[in-house]
Image (cartoon, rainbow, N blue to C red; front, side, top):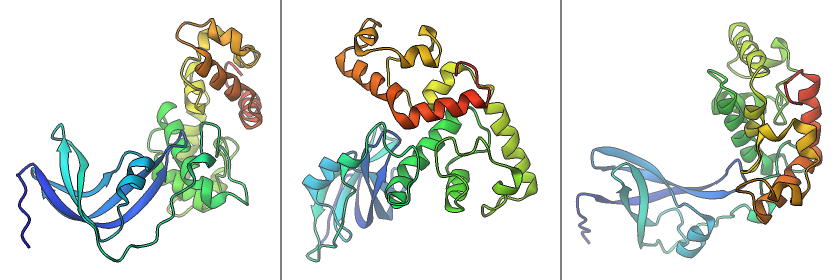
Length: 257
């Protein structure tokens, strides 16, 4: 059987399905494909966008999908062309376990479940705080070595502890320590964003303890903050782990805490 597609569309076989948990707890299915070329680009993976879409399309390894480029740049699945008879067993992460306030830290009972979201949180934090040369790969190595197990676990690290991670020697450890020290000087507003404060919060309203005392009614007075955002902000500032992180930052001398 021959399948013919326009030049802007390609037929690809699914090699595997990965479920990624993002910083905010959103579960996103990612299809790994046997590479195809589309508009001069080599495509080997594509996001399905949402868990609901994966459940509706029931894509499994071995299936064939039609891939297009949205805006000539972003690969996307246009449709499932055909499905293999042998359906591989897949288990998606339960979405109810992940949210804006989950997985700030790894616990023995949830290490495997929380690793992906914590990694996403750490990567976002280092981007917001402007840590040069510290990305997902660095955090992954530190997590795998058991050196970093929570969002602010790097604050009290020593060069010797950093060198326990694969690929980090004395020179790299010194560079990391320098970036960590610089991050402590980041503005208060930047720190609030890096910690994952929900939209609507504003550092100009006061220091940490002022904002932690805001009620839902107080937040709704702020322009652009309605009942839903107000509830999310109250939940964030009152969360025990978030409050503990605020104390850590206060002890580290971070402005605003």
